[in-house]
Structures are given as structure tokens and as C-alpha cells.
Image (tube, rainbow over all chains, first blue to last red; front, side, top):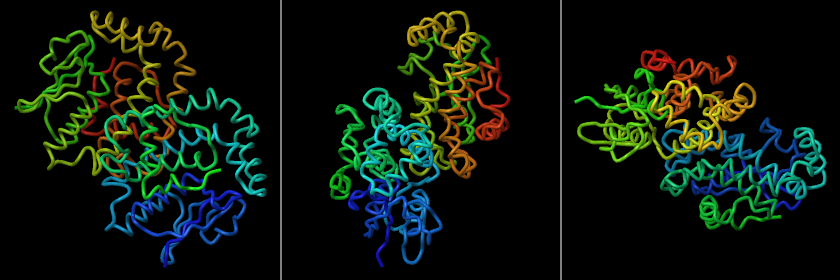
Length: 228
Length: 228
């Protein structure tokens, strides 16, 4: 029985854009596991109620249901331990990169692509997204991204400085080979890439060179994904 | 032959304050290795010229000289591999925490304690420190720390948010046990603690609870260190 992954999708069901779902897509490819993706939308709460969650990714494997991207990555390492590890020899060490990406990089990317996310959503999701995000930011979606060409993109690029430092010392965030460390941040960039054409990285940014390599992993899983 | 560690010192040679040297002090204690600390001051370049560097830590062990805290940690794991590992099963995964601490946490702490550092230094070092740091910051030491009670400390506490996220999931940055992940950030806090009485963390900050545990490690190595 194939693994099933519930993934956040746009009005076009082929547009899958959740950074957390992309982490797991990459993790499954890393493990060489086949997956059946199921498009899910923000307002389809009942569709994943069986997993006792309101958010994706939700992974179903051999009758087991696992939620939360970090927990799914742990599950894949525990269950498919003959495959190359995702989280490395000391998984606890990756929690910081995961927390920093969620807490620092995601808000910085949201300031740039929040309106673009809205624009790819199905009508019901658009209303839900606008209401919940405008309440969270305390301003309209349009206001959130108003300065994205100047302070917005500058803030993201500045925040990514420690990633540049790491990539000066080693080719992948995982070291000599890519692993979940890379998939965490690649997932974040794919989130933006799926919904927007806005260039997050300067062309001469060393992170752009790493990103170009990441796009080609697993037969171009990220490079060939549907974009808005 | 004991291991020798050249450490940055104040006018009072018992005040050792470099965050990078504290990382190595903790790393040596983790490995159960004895060390002879040698006080070194910014302007004593000739004293470490043998190591072809102008910065500490410099470690000398069995005729070998190693510089740079990260490289020293790697050396200790390679050389003393029967002792508990410092860098864990995938050392490359710790580079990000190291780079983030150096590049984000250190500037934020400097904005708070820069003048305090100056004040503990020997006279020759004071002149050197003021000149080099005021050139780097483009303002006087006094101006750098002028808003430390308000925006300065708020910026540091906000930047530490991903650490709080990790400490909600596990007791140490290293996971169930402390390791170099913890020593990286403990070294940074010890830098401030050695030169200043300014409270970097709010009392109810979960990081303060972790810090209190860290201060007691290795018979209170950090807790009992000389402070200004």
C-alpha cells in the first residue's frame, strides 16, 4: 500500500505550496519511497479530521497516521532505517535549524509572497486566508507586501546570513551530502516559488547556487513542480 | 603534558571573557581533559604568533597547535574519540547554530555589553578595543550601548526566539544531554556575564532556566568564574 500525503493545494490542484509538505515530499524522495499526494485546501477541515488535526502535512502509511512535518521525518527515519537517514546522527541538533526556519525565515518570506499565496487559492480558501492572515498581521494582505521590493526582500536576505556562512564551509546544509537540513530550507523556498515569481535571492547570492542544486535533486522534483 | 589554552583576559587576568574560549573550556570539561589556561590580551599579538594567528582560542596539545574554536572542537572529537562526542553524529548539522550564534547573537550582545567589555580591559587593550570597535560600529562605544535598556535588550530577546522553541521540545540544545550545541550559546552568555551585570534574559524566560542549569555544569565551571 502506497504512502499517502495530504498536501496544501491551490485552486489548481497541481499547485502544492506548503513548505512543510515540501519538506516531506523531499524526505520521501530521499528515502526512495513512492507517495500518493492528495490535494487539500485550508477550508477542508473535515477531510483530515480523521487525523485529529487541522493542518497538513498528514501522512498515512500502513494504517498509521502521522501529523507534523518534524514528527513525520522522525517516523520515516525510525520506520525506514535501512535507507539513508534524514535527521543525521543527532536529530536533536536539527531542531534549531527547523525552529529558526519556521520562526524567522517564514515570516520574512510571508512579508513578500502573502498576497501571491492568496491569489493562487480556491475562492473559499481565499476568503478564509484573507480573514485569518489579516487578523494575524493586523493589516491587509496588500499592506503586508507593500514594501517587499525594498525592506521586505532586504530583511529576508539579511536574515539568511548564517546560511551563507555554513555554505562557505560545506556544499550542503547536511554536510558533504544533502539531507533533511537542506529539505527544511528548500521547502521554504519552494513555498515562495510555487506561488510567486518574485526573486527572493540575488543572482550572485551563494544561497542561489545551493538552491539551483537543490531544485535538481530527485530528478528535478522541485524544478518541475507546477508554479503559479 | 597538559593541554594549554590561550584565553582572552581582562586587566584582572582571572577575568576570561571570550565566548569562543568559553566554548573550548566547556568542551575540554565535557571530555574530562585538564587544561592550563594562559591569559592573553588583544595587544599581545607576538605571544600567539607561533600559532600563525592573531586571535584566541589557541590550543596546544602534545606539540600540536590548533586555532579557531570550531576547528578545536573537531580536533577534540577526533583525538579523544573514546570520550563523549562534542559535535554529535553529524557535526555538519551544528555549523548552523554556530554561525547563527556568531552572526546574530554576538552582535546583539555586543550592543548591550560593548562598553562593559572595554571597562574590564588592561589600559593598552582599552585603547586598541575602543579604536577598532568604534571604527567597526561607526560610533562611540557609549553610543552603541545607549539604548541597551530598551531596543538593545528587546532585540536580543526577540532574536533568541528559536532557542525557546527548541527548549520546549528537549531539555538541552544537544537533546537529552548537553553537548557542544549548548556550549556554543553558553559561551556567548558567559562572555556577557564575565564583563557585565546587565540581565540579558528576563527571569521568566525559559532560556534563563536552561542557563541556570548550564552554569552548574562541570562543578559550576561557569557559575564560579571570575566576573567584573
